[in-house]
Length: 392
Ligand SMILES: CC(=O)SCCNC(=O)CCNC(=O)[C@H](O)C(C)(C)COP(=O)(O)OP(=O)(O)OC[C@H]1O[C@@H](n2cnc3c(N)ncnc32)[C@H](O)[C@@H]1OP(=O)(O)O
Image (tube, rainbow, N blue to C red; front, side, top):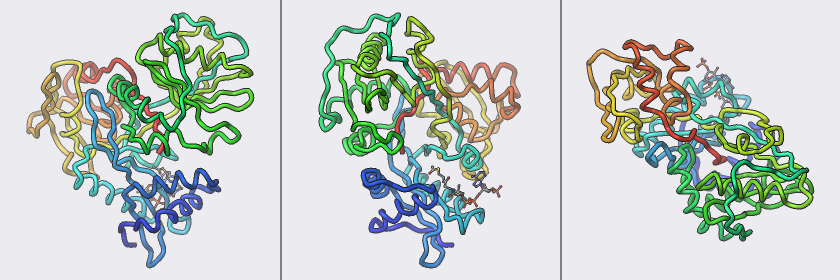
């Protein structure tokens, strides 16, 4: 098996290949979108002679982490032919992706996993989670927060990048976990014409407030919210009120919302907003542990010696003296460790979405110095839970 680049001319073949491994029929509009993803990615192939037996795409993106935007390999389109599975093909492609990310100086990689059991072995940890919300819109939505009265306007999605991006940038600064979106990402990704998961729904509609926006699709009785961000709870209230009051609509579905979304608390009748499900969203890989730890902002001034286990990227392996606070530092040390943890678990806690204390209680993070777990949790604390709503 030879691991090498897939040429751009074969980008469409990657879409066909994805159809085979995911057992799906990719419809017209979605085909174009997938082809666009394959073309803008770094394309890694596992070749068995002239046949592609495995593929992996890595999109060069920027990921919002607490207090910073980090270069990130956003990994997608991963698949191995059913004829070649469980022979180490995926492992070889991940090794190549890791090497590419190191060479490009990207401190992190991220992905959405088709199955949660796959990526932990490669040093990925589940870093953001999401919930699905549903509003009963057959009756008026009463809210405990007074909606901001500024007027809302529907805009042409073509003008969305210019109008929405500054609002989205503010949201990324307030809440980590999302990707920086360029104009193409807005139009071909976020506001794509066809959404395979919502057959029969309208093209995207975009409603804008000076301090927020909502992008949604609708059919004759349902609004499906695809993206909603707001500077303040009052703007959030204005957007939810609008969505729930559209004529003929009986239900508002929001399949991907932050785990600490205010809406369930904001509804005057809590039974009117149902939390449908919770699920794992973004898996994060700290490609360069010290660079990632230096880059994020920290809630407390403290010092830790972390003993990091990373068999896949040995440059991360060993003891790191981490100084948190206004001027973070992270350097090699021989001092005795306060905590021992895997690179995957460090990735899980890195954006503040998983408590170190939970992992310590599971027995997978070892505390050598009493209170080190509680202190690290305090240093990692962020005001809003991390949230990823970028589909790739
Ligand atoms: C970011 C994304 O794109 S997610 C999409 C992932 N793709 C899919 O789910 C499509 C369908 N599945 C596939 O294409 C393949 O089965 C893959 C990509 C999941 C795995 O590829 P393979 O080449 O078979 O994996 P590989 O042989 O390198 O496996 C390495 C290890 O992972 C384990 N593993 C692989 N797939 C799975 C799985 N689905 N569940 C649990 N363990 C798995 C293997 O058992 C092996 O473990 P070991 O090292 O202890 O022996």
